[in-house]
Image (cartoon, rainbow, N blue to C red; front, side):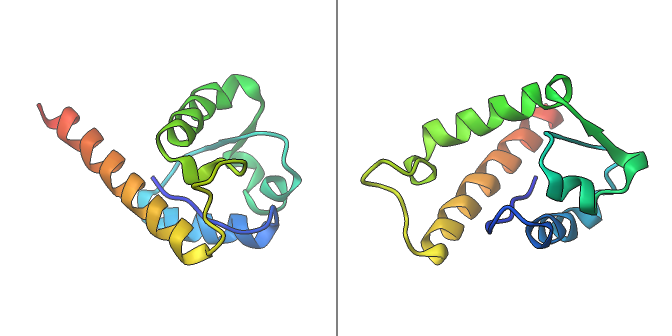
Length: 104
């Protein structure tokens, strides 16, 4: 749906939530990362592996298909602009492919 690049901070989580505002998400499932707890309202926040198993599967898929997301490769982007452009392409493709399958 969306991503936000940056340090593991509450500011980065706020950027992500800003991008997700139009989606009207009822609940957020995360790991125990403190920044999520600082930003996401308690009533909308579910924490734990039971909730994030599928999300981690998607992250693994993204890393496998985009070597820029893996630090110790020759493809890793040092420039934030290149990283963002690559992620935009991937998310745009993935989001559009998902919507095509739902309309069939």
